[in-house]
Amino acid sequence: MALNREQHNRIMRVYQERRFQHLQERRQRAEEISLKLPSYDRLSEEAAQLRTEQAKSLLSHDGSRAEALAERIAGIEAEKKALLLQNGYPEDYLELRYTCPLCRDTGYVNNEKCGCQKKLISELIYRQEAGLPEALWEDSFQTYDFSLFDDTDPIPELLRQTGKRVTQRAYMQTVVPLLKKYAEEFPQKGGSLLLTGQTGTGKTFLSNCIAKEVIDRCQQVLYVRAGDFFDAMARESFERREGQEALQTDAAATCDLLIIDDLGTERRTEFTLSRLFSLVSDRLARKKGTIISTNLDGNNIKHLYGERMTSRLAQYTVIPFYGKDLRLRGGN
Image (cartoon, rainbow, N blue to C red; front, side):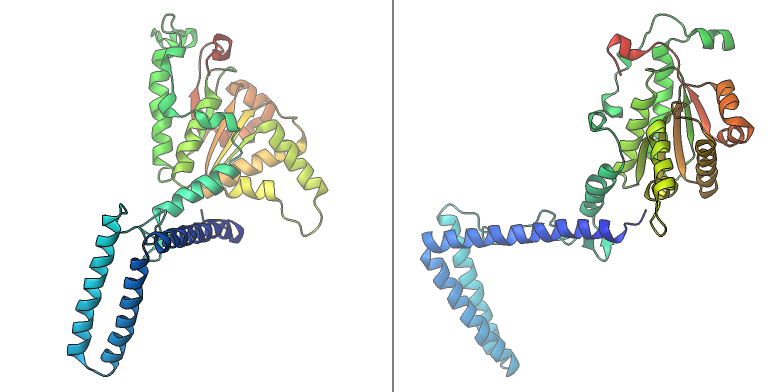
């Protein structure tokens, strides 16, 4: 997703500050060398004078003199490096340094965004604006702990449905790779997910893992809790003055990945139902990825949100979560 002007300016200010900082640091190193090695400055002045003479020789087409001056300049530069080394400094001590040598702190390489700019966008823009609770940033697919899940008793629902004895741990060992693959292939394959199951079975944790993976790929993510989100949309709609932008609504409609957590906890009004239906329908039409997590099962969703909403959610990939509340066991 393209940056707006304000976001672009924020990123460019970071590069400007980096360049200024590195110039200041080089100036400080130069002052240090001037104090400790006065002969270094004399060599620099001599080289500068020779460069002026060299330029004049080139303008007068005196190639042989220009070549001789170039050799003398090279010799002086070698002396300067040797002087630094003899006094315990690296030979490039006075060269300008960069946070990113590839783009030289401009953010671009051959008119394309440098990898460092993409990382900055992820860290400074999308991560801050995603709405993820700060405590959740420590969690990831890499820290996922399957040992928190029961590996003794079969999941009753699956036992009734399939006759197979599958423990909660074994089941999650099949679910997590699917969600990780979804994140890794986003947005090329896209699609939307409906995560269903009781409280504390890991839906929010895994939604968060997906969000961070997608943000790291410089995609814009918006994470919202259903209750807070629809309350904010209602306030925005009823309190907004003419000409004001509907920021919450627009962000939810246009972000690359929208995550609605705890659907079913919001106050269900005609406004809420209408906005939810419009949002889900619009994002499906735009082929924008959406993840909805809910404690409701299919029958409850149909009862609470109606046939039209159920038909839209039927286009989502449904992933049920089973088992007991992990938080009661000290897990995630």
